[in-house]
View 1 (cartoon, rainbow, N blue to C red):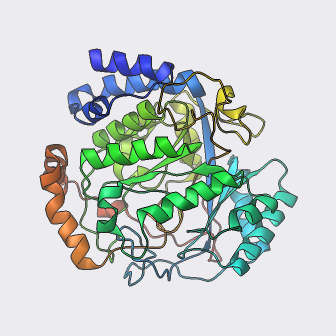
View 2: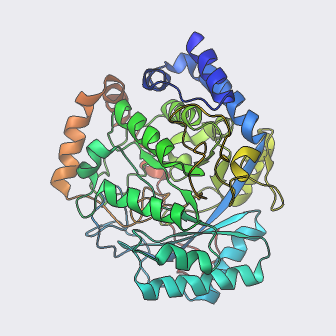
Length: 434
């Protein structure tokens, strides 16, 4: 297929595909999905070999968020039966993190629901970062606390944070359809604050909210322009009790196409399969390792993942290996920019390159989610029910592909049996899944 050959060549050169090429990847048929995976896999192996980075989530504060993001089980007014608790103490968070690190995780992602941290919250998280780093030499710590105010990113960096996550989630043009209590520009501003403070910036998306192919391409191109070191790809978990509970728009094949498109647009960036992989990729999860070089180990913020041992077995059986603490995740041209990040000045990249190719960008990277951007479809947020309903009604007209996928999966493809609320780990007396 000429399209795939062209995209492989561009990915090996870190060249930006055209929008038409990115859209064409999403429009390929299920008959061609293995060809798409094989092509994108060449790009993934060029920059990351067969290494898989493991990340582990610790939900520091769960539920009761004042934001209204439609996808989120922790949103204002959510009826989802999730765990709700206030801030974990530093020693509690450190014990939770230790379970993931013992299971092979290289990075700990500290997440808290809410619009954004107060200065007191930043102090709490700083104490937690220090506790984790004192007990675990070489561990990477990423914070995901929502919208940042001036000076907060710098304080987190001084406390030892390596990264900050805040996802864009969807395209700028449709952002108001999923959230009304903050703006797309607010999210961009927080990612830029993380960059400026020398934190490795992580920012990604949520697929499956009824968006069109054009929306998906828009947000991935916007992410490339922001130049994060890592791009988590979440697949919506339609929690009962949230406005998007009926949005079952994904098939395993569509998830693979989305991951391939992200890899082609962001060839040399850590692409992480985040929330929803067990629900939507299901038995095709191993194929996704040919596209992404990073996953979360064990459970997510408010939902359960597959057993940590099953994750490790899957990686081995698929012919990949867990990235160890001594290995640098990003390719040399990005890691040379400092903090595991951007291309040094003079490194040849195509115009508009981004996603790890901007010579002038600061340090950046991460994995978790933030203020409505987390792995289980988000933390902090959801939209009022009428807006969510309108989104579901109009999404089908935006893209023939989305319309077809929605019609086929809304009923027959709804796997509500795979959505399990987390009842172990942080915030409970039960051992975590790691």
